[in-house]
Image (cartoon, rainbow, N blue to C red; front, side, top):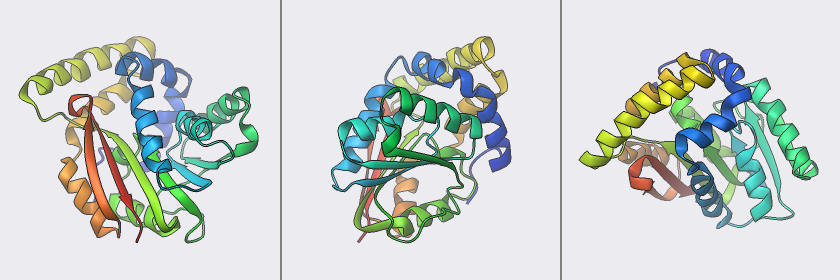
Length: 235
């Protein structure tokens, strides 16, 4: 199942290139809303209870840090293809005084280097859109979760409302690309805009979660549908 526009290796190189400006651009392009989306996704995953969590596509560590702040005493393992992103994640987590509760390592979502049932919860923010073989990745997420483990996936999606669609297209095709060109790698942010438009409908992702073995799946549009929160449980 390949909806992503570029390969895993191209993604790794791209995120290595933009790591230094990633947080700044996230804040500017989302108008600061990424903090609300992240907290919502983390709270959804933590509703399943537990202490061991996996963050897939952890980037610069914001999701992992949010998990640790909302669940004191937990431990988060973060994986990412980009070594530069992982360096920023480790530095930010240390600055937050949480480095003893987080482990960061290079890893591929389609070949998770963990035993079955290793985690109480799995979370992934703005990563699924970049995975070439989504079906395999979702099955891997299911495999490493314990029974009744919780999954939360946050992803950028095209809104469905006609008015929001117009606003969203102006933002992604105009503002996002301009900021990317001015402050970072322009190609990366052209890819971002294109990949959002290329991403499947939420109902299809929900069906893929069911096919991977998740139960009680649901999807929730956030901020007019520019982001969708997907969730599910293991039987």
